[in-house]
Length: 90
Image 1 (cartoon, rainbow, N blue to C red):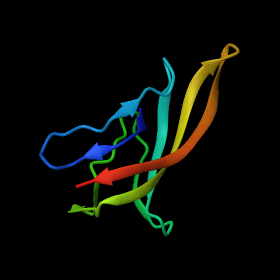
Image 2 (tube, one colour; image 1 turned 180 degrees about the vertical axis):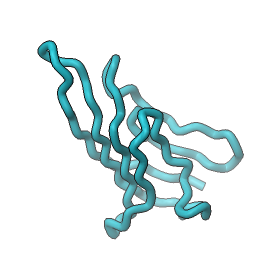
Image 3 (cartoon, rainbow, N blue to C red; image 1 turned 90 degrees about the vertical axis):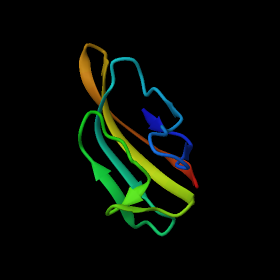
Image 4 (spheres, helix red, strand yellow; image 1 turned 90 degrees about the horizontal axis):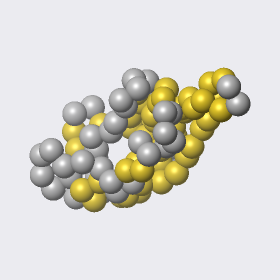
């Protein structure tokens, strides 16, 4: 899933997201602030960001994500990259 908007006003809230591509496998998710500082990195297929950094809630604002994922094309797995911005709302 690619990040969209996330409202963290209550526990258990989920991000608005869109599917990468049917059958795609996520390899890496990175979240950075506007200064390029790494806030979160995960390499699990079910990677997500809960809106925190080192257990402390991140401030509302714009963050940038970078995804690396695999998808099946032309009879083989292809590595793809996607980057964008997301709004963290408190």
